[in-house]
Length: 109
Length: 168
Image (tube, rainbow over all chains, first blue to last red; front, side, top):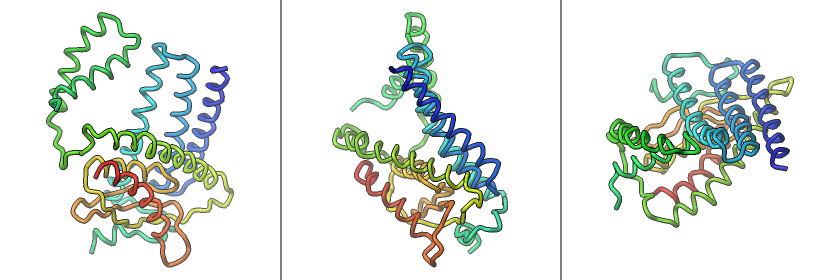
């Protein structure tokens, strides 16, 4: 029973990871790619690790998988934030369809 | 009041035990000096404001049963939304960077607010101005009207209300 649920979780996680990868290929600029990379990959990978934990239980691998999912939730958002900020400071251009950029307005003004 | 170095060491030791699951005698003996070493490396990381989370079960419970469910639900919705926008043949995106004002002051509250924003639908926190409390948020889709930041504001306020009750 637990194994079936675990496999379902792993399947969902793989699907979301694939969506994240498609997003990284299709979206037009750094900032949008970061968004796809943060959200889909965080949830996809956490889902895979949770499924691993459900299948393996409280064994050596299962507990490590749970810990890793915890650290991924904490660090993925922070690293995306750092990359978005440094990309903007380094002057990476935004996609031409961008509606408004109030960050550079404030930095220049 | 538990001293900070002791709490840090205990936290490191618990993490060490989990990484070495199931913990044997050897792992536990090595773990004690390793935890002390990590504590000496990290204890001087400066905090701008001290979190008020210590010893208030009320706030802990609210964090567990109010913040975390909302957070996971929003994360799930974020994934569906990004998946929809990515798979749609026309790529329906209207990106923008908008400024949103926040009233949170504590380090912990601001960190979690920025993290939550990065993981809710279509927004990523880009920068934070400590003095004015202005967050710069990159949005994947903004509405077509003149109020570009209405959507981002609503999402930020949702988390802000919960986090203010926990950390302020």
